Amino acid sequence: MASSLEALKSSVEAALGEYLVSAVIDRHELTIVCRTASIVEACNRLKDTAELRFEQCIDLCGIDYSTYKDGAWNGARFAVVCHLLSISNNQRIRVRFFAEDDDFPLVPSLVPVWSGVNWFEREAFDLYGIVFEGHPDLRRLLTDYGFVGHPFRKDFPLSGHVEMRYDPEQARVIYQPVTIEPREITPRIIREETYGG
Image 1 (cartoon, one colour):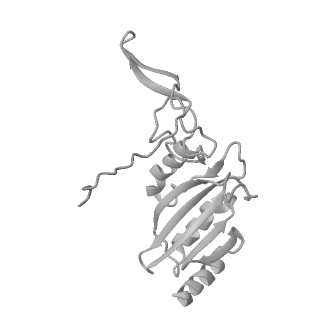
Image 2 (tube, helix red, strand yellow):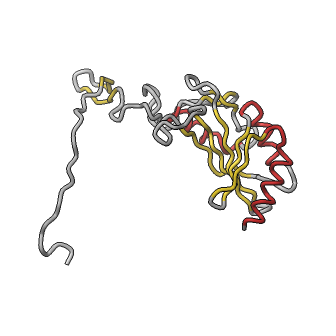
Image 3 (cartoon, one colour):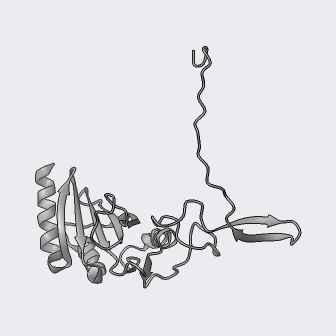
């Protein structure tokens, strides 16, 4: 396995050249970090180079590194991670690239390379606030259109900002500030002698 991963790493390094920041084999997986400004070109090379042929992006997700390793992270806060599959060569690779601005994370869309990442990018936008420049229809996917914030960010409050409820007097759904009181949850302990037996 190690020899095939080393060969894949060499092929990726040769194909990407200046687009590549790093390539690491860890836990029998190859992870590469690419320059964000040229991520579309890098992914096209990964897809079109004969010895690589990563035809499918099987997953794309956002990551918030703000509290990674108890705050020991010193790089950009937001990253996008893609998992690619080469059916032709029976190989997998992980590609990561970072948004340069932590306040307004902006990265190029990969929809022109793999059209199937459309909803993955919408999900990363909705949950992390990562904006995919050039996306054909970037809008919320899982939360309501009036939702405030991005719930997978590490600084998002656990109870949220607003709650939605039906108001019978107004005969419609309304939004109001969260009224949930923080509480300590104590697990229930079952001490019946015949329990489970």
